[in-house]
Image (cartoon, rainbow, N blue to C red; front, side, top):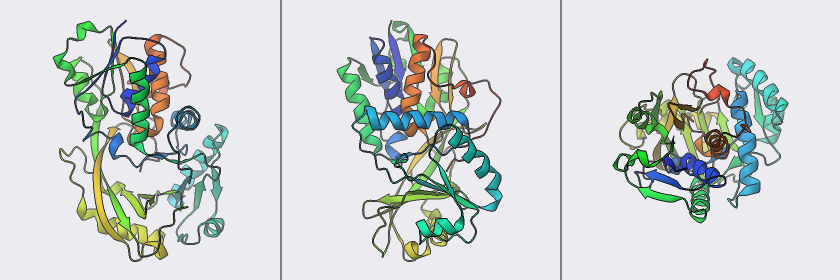
Length: 353
């Protein structure tokens, strides 16, 4: 059986790796040899189980355990801190119960306890904050994981072709798996499959502060303000949902949004970001499913595909690779991803930032 994987990013290589444990004659096609536009290479590397939908929690729990126990990729276990205002109180209550029922170690703290744990945090307008303190969440270097997958694939005999898959006859393959990120929509059309996903351009800023970096801070996702940030080296990196530029063709950062980002950072951690300076930025794409911001993992007319991760491709790549390899080989699924089918009733993932 000849297998072709279209897309050599983080999802494509996870699929190829997991397939190589069960099959032979696998070829990965990647058109962007330098991965200059690949989403994984422009990711902040976050890994969390704090989500509002069961499939995302399940994917995270499996994937984080895989990364810690099956790879040699360094895991920065600072944790995550999600902040909720009163408007999001019901979301907090429901998702906290879901996560804990599924085995996540999420804890909820009121403003007083948050202030004790994070003295620099402005809690005046907060309902509660959810945090993990056991090292079960954090971040990794995205390129390190991609390299790990690739080395395992090469060792298993997976072939790599850097070029357009259309230049190579599909008739030489028995099974095709499309993992082309936000370009899956265009690749799907080539095979006569409509996949409703699009690229959304987001900017991440690099920041230096006058005060030495708080290296022990978790990745903070302020859902009320629509920002996230984490320590990185001698400074911080920060993103903002307000600079989503949709289907932009270029990857020029949204420089003009910096002041809005700074205002929100200063509001939440005034003593840290009072004299912050933006020192650089980059932009990358989220492959986004418009209906509910959840992934599409399915097969149609003999073509398998996985896309629409909306910024979660890196963190969920181990689970995606496992389940897709099971779908291709006809094995029972280890994780129930039926809610990710192409034809479905939308259930929106609320914690996209």
